[in-house]
Image 1 (cartoon, rainbow, N blue to C red):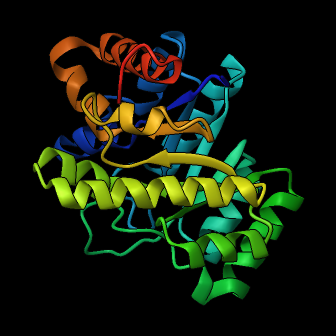
Image 2 (cartoon, rainbow, N blue to C red):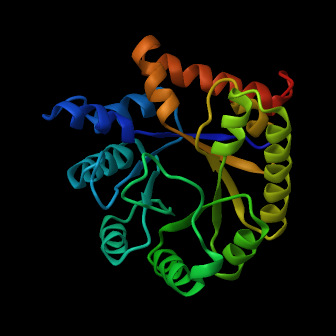
Length: 254
């Protein structure tokens, strides 16, 4: 079975730094430590309000990824400013996400079906520049069909509702969300779109997602950065890698 990639989102290293001000902790240093520990890539979201990752962070993280020969996945809103930054930066991938100033974190998936022209133009410009465009979307058939229509090479499914339902013991909702994820993954794969997943994933929920053979990459941030406070970044990443591989290989039932 195809090896499942792990990307670390370093946004919340910057969240901790910005709470106090100054230069520490440094998200670029976290990116280097993670790459040295074996993660397959780094994700960072440059929000319009710059609440965590800053422009200088993105430049530094890109340099770290380039030096390691590993990809940077640049999360961005679909705006002219962010598109311009992405085209100048030339990361390996750019993941288009919804963004609202009042949200704590990314809530739900990008509305692609209702913004086909705007999102499609961004995807085309990114792809033409050699940047692999990805869409962070809900497990909604209409959004997947729209992603295929605008020729997005990758979709990343928002797994927050699934993971929250499991943690809260809402069995019926969890079963519903898992069925939706399985159907969405199969639909995207059948349309020739590479499938990624992210949001809300922790040690207890990763197996339900990693076991799906069509999923090629997981992008995880908040949980791993939080766990690193207690066990260290390398240890948190190594344990996640072990759980991903065990689910993928079938040595642990999910």
